[in-house]
Image (cartoon, rainbow, N blue to C red; front, side, top):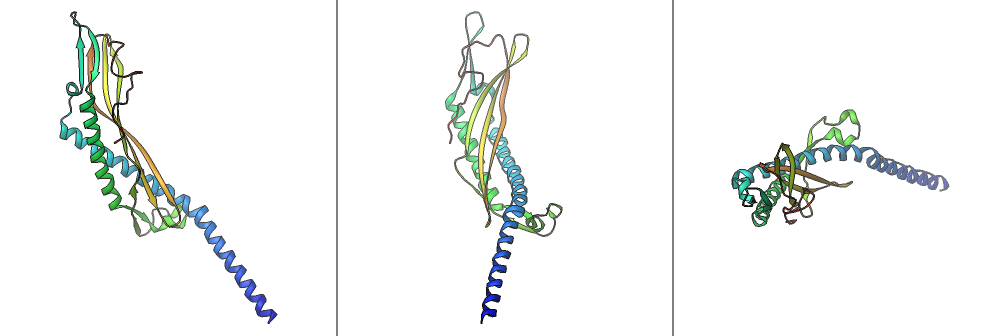
Length: 215
């Protein structure tokens, strides 16, 4: 009876040791490798989805510099004020947000393919073997904002550029871990060279101005 009890105790201890070893291997070896592989794939896909959304909206709206920016002159023909049509800019930012959201949702439904070799946690097996499709979801509120930048373009010339900056947050949930991938993508929407001195007074400050709301 004592011998059976001893064997049972040893078997339980061995089972606990095996389970602990497996868990340590999963969390310390496999998870970091899988996380790095999936993070890179999701970051690339989310950036691509946002890029496609921006290009589509710019083509759809036929955005022009003069539609968004108004230059005011004095009687001598000198520029007195550079102002931005915030209504149009906000509408445009919302459109960027809406289209990018659709693309990100579709990207999550399509998922990403991860090779089975990646799940071994061994670097030399990453990307090898049949693939497993993993779904992920876009979480939180994707944010968008416009930035206005002034840079010198030569003597008595200033380049005025309007950029859209989109922040996307994507979550990947697996049985052993979850990860959030944040990406920030900035695109040039329109620009123009202003001939003459740019006044000290314009819509914004520090040559960079956030114009659009978060949604």
